[in-house]
Amino acid sequence: MAHSSSFMPHWFKSKQSQDDIRIQNELKSSCELPRHVGIIMDGNGRWARLKGKSRVEGHVAGVESVRDIVEASSQLGISCLTLFTFSIENWKRPENEISALMRLLIKVLKKETRQLHDNNIRLHVIGDLNMVSTEVMRTLTDTMELTKNNNAMMLNIALSYSGKWDIVQACRNIAEQVRSGAIDPQSIDENLIESLLSTSMMPDPELLIRTSGEFRISNFMLWQSAYSEIYFTNTYWPDFRRPQLYEAIREFQSRERRFGQTSEQLGTKSFKRQA
Image (cartoon, rainbow, N blue to C red):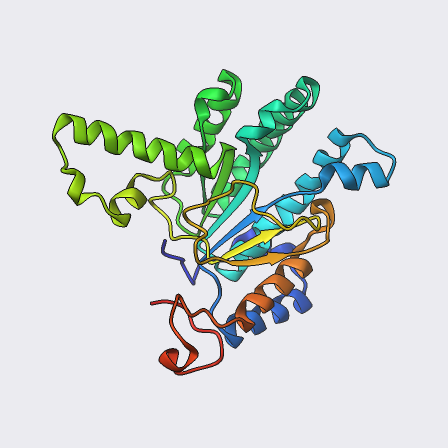
């Protein structure tokens, strides 16, 4: 996705400190930035419990982190940011928590849609949206329609999503095409599968961040994260802000990405991104 270097979001710029601009410029000049960052936002409930608050209050606090990370990512020029918002497995949670989460999603979208649009950010949603309510779907559709031509950054919301679901729905599509005679089974390859995943219009995540101290990817982008650099942090999501994002990016930039090759083949022991 193209990034307009001449475009500086006015509400981002007005709130950004000179020190923050300096840090971002250092990150941009020191090495390649990830084009696509995926974040498993975890720890809202534990953050709330530590503070004597309800789980719902933890989710509300996490919204401020979402806002700050979206702003910082856009300022850095990251092309795509995917936030794992609600998994298919999360539908098993207590009904009152699910209802509160969906109401919060609607409220945040209605409040932030105009700012997303004014800052040239496109909203995209992946997941089994047949499971969400009509009201949630209508709110998502309104935001996606308004922002569909924006190109500074894609904000990708993984809602009612799982990596296994994504692969299964691609396989069903392939099976239908084979049955209809549109494709031959021998022509099925990685490129075909990738073209049918819900993320087909974006690069695979180069950096995958998991907050809250858990060391797993929880059924998130299983196919797409095959070569993602994974960064785990003990920070709970409501406390994860741009300084923590910058630290994750610094760690990403320090790693050697070999994609099955050796350091000698790459000709360097420093960071190198696959062309």
